[in-house]
Length: 450
Image (cartoon, rainbow, N blue to C red; front, side):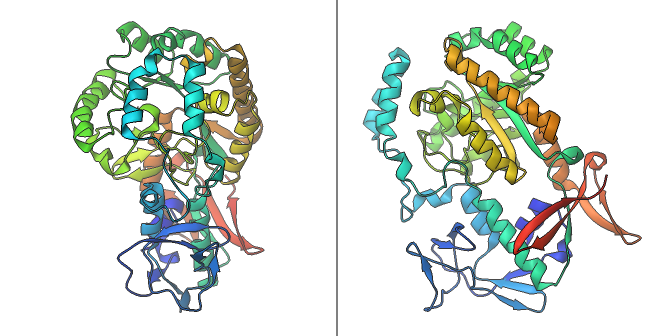
């Protein structure tokens, strides 16, 4: 019951006490819990006098406190998993819909796509993505439903036990305020040729990035370029199989493709994966032998597959660590929205940093190599990340480094010794103790002295 809270904060188990009040329904539904926090999952019987908000029951006050235990009308782990794994997409009652494009049209588009210029492609994509501004959930441009939901539950636990504060293990190593990682998906031969120049740009900013390489059919992958990426301190990951939109079409396709992808992961010496065009099904990830995935967007309003994981933090899907894409990728910014500035990126970054989350950036060499204006905007973004690193303790890391840290943190524990809390476990030398308290009805984070 309490694992979703203790797993997220790495706080002592005995300080978090919740339980489900009644038997849960067989079906899932949307409901509100807390200020503007729309959730999805199974619930207990909803009182007849329950208030509604925007057509959904508001369960913000439908809980009881028995002693120090909070009795809830839902299972928190079920709610969080439904969001992170996008299970809510099966229910359209919140005005959520996938891109309106049938399988025949989709197949035709992907067949002719390699022969279409960007001008034609972006016109067709804008047509397919029309009315995206009308989508109410997830919340654009960054959705933090998971964080707000967990914070609301923890606030109730603190108040129920009349605690002044709860200790937890800070999210990032060495007390970093947030984390950022830069990634590059290489889709075409032209993009592959631009990889050395893009590494020069990243190195000039003092940032190492990861390159996701398509292993077959799109272009010839030489050992020379793979070794050059690793030798220069960058990271190498696998990008789909053939980048043709087929991998996640059916589970049979996925299982056949996963066997080949697992071989390429070993051949590349890679630990990470990202699917083509952010196509995904989290329930099938166990077919891959990858340590981490980067295929699930935070908000997918401008992706071919709608949805979003509604969190700005890494999370586990079985043994796979998901590193969600939390900012808009360059193609959507430049060619769908037609914006050539860092303003939207800065807005998203500010919202992510307010939660101390993961800033995940995706810029394609394919879309900036002949786009001086887009390349200039990318340089501005790098400069902004460097400024935050130097002034605000932003940790800029490779995806593999984030994966290692989050796995280490997931095994750390807080123990009480001589009246003081201490962090134990592998990697704990870089961990920092922090505290959660309530001020003005809101949850407040505080780092302990180093």
